[in-house]
Image (cartoon, rainbow, N blue to C red; front, side, top):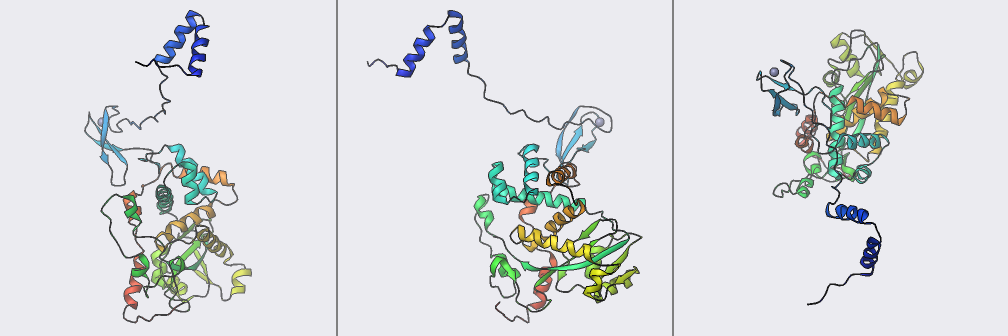
Amino acid sequence: MKKPKLSKEALEAYKALMNLSEEEQKLVFRKISQPEPAETVQEPPKEKENCPHCGSSHVSRYGKTPAGYQRFICVDCRKTFGVKERPVWIGSHFPKEVWIEYMRLMNTGATLKDLAEALHINVTTAFHWRHKILTALKDGKSDAVLEEHTQADETFTYLNTKGNKNASNNLHMHKPTNRAPDYKSVRKSGHRHGRGSCSSTRGLNQGFVCTPLAIGGNEICWGRPSNMGAPSSSDLDSVYTGHLGETVILVTDASRAAGKYAQEKELPIIQLKSATESRQGKYNLQKVNKLHSAFKQDLARFNGVSTKYLENYANLTIFKQETPSISGIARATLLVEKLSNVPRVARWKELRNIDYPSFVYEVLDMNETSENEVST
Ligand SMILES: [Zn+2]
């Protein structure tokens, strides 16, 4: 039998060991035979709440609430209750710190790829986090009320059907399915255009998504995509209803829809007759115009945004508008604070299956009979 031979290094280690005192040798042997436990990540304390009904600490997990939060049941009084703190990262497999770093980077304009690399997360995860965050921002705005002189105007963006309907196949979560790409169902001509843009009709037309945005005298902003093409007074109503306070005086351009809307709702309105007037007069549309440019800049920064997600991005722009002249870090901190207790956390499945606003389809149905292909 061949005798195992010690390597040079091992021989040197042996010699060095033999030079140690007996006490030191014992310590070394003990160290070798009991390897140090692998560095354990301190688990964050699980949110364990006391029963709000009877104060008992004898509670156990009891499924989830419809909003996706952990629900508890009190073993003593059998009543159920939810968690108090409801951060957007609740239920995530990643600790809060990763999310906070995500929000900080997101604020500096990091792309999904940047975020995925920096935080060692999947690009798909990065995408879903972005929309969990944006959805929470949107939900947090649902009680926005604008007051006093409120500049209101619409901005228009291309209908964008960017996105890969078959991307979910790559996740290997189910049998691969082949769905037609979005532009086939959403675009009138069924032709693909760069970045999924649609511009097959002319003028201020049905190929554009209209997003009414408004900024109140109290600096509160509100808005979301409402329709395709020029808005009607009822389109404006669908966006602004419930968000204009008692003291609102609308300041708008000379659009008929705005005038009609104000008349129907008996709202005081100042309609500016010309572009010059809306720039220079005592009442103007400067603030809302600035908001529109910021919105478009944000969309460009994200490399073209699918119309599916337009509302989410509008809320990012609004968030930035409402926190002006603070540093990126301060804004990130504010974002984290804002998202530490949100009314609802969007679920993964919901984000994955998010659909176009219904108005996109309504326009398609309307145009189906007068299909007329125009290449642009
Ligand atoms: Zn109880």
